[in-house]
Length: 127
Ligand SMILES: [Zn+2]
Ligand SMILES: [Zn+2]
Image (cartoon, rainbow, N blue to C red):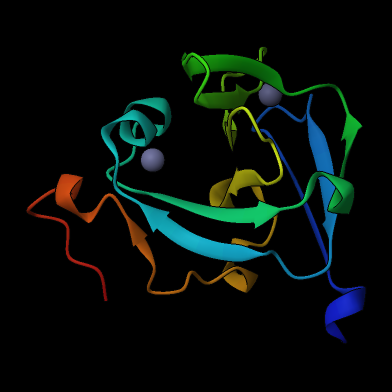
């Protein structure tokens, strides 16, 4: 399959929110910041970044919460609470989707890029 034809579908745990992204993500990377940790409940977040033009929310809507007003906007399902997105304000030129929200995250292997490595948990060892 060529890059242009790549398609990534995803959604929340309950199915109220579904989305589809087309083409390769602009980046796939790790984030070790404490805000991501709290939002996800997981020791580290992995994001696939897509331009707003390259994805569509096909069912329901992503509820937004500004975790750092003017800086960071986080998205989730209002029904089941699934963590879905993160956007940097004020320019929302990329929407960062949590890879776990995709149906087939095995296709979205992260690069070695690590954001906020200084906040990484000392017991977390990545292969
Ligand atoms: Zn849901
Ligand atoms: Zn983060």
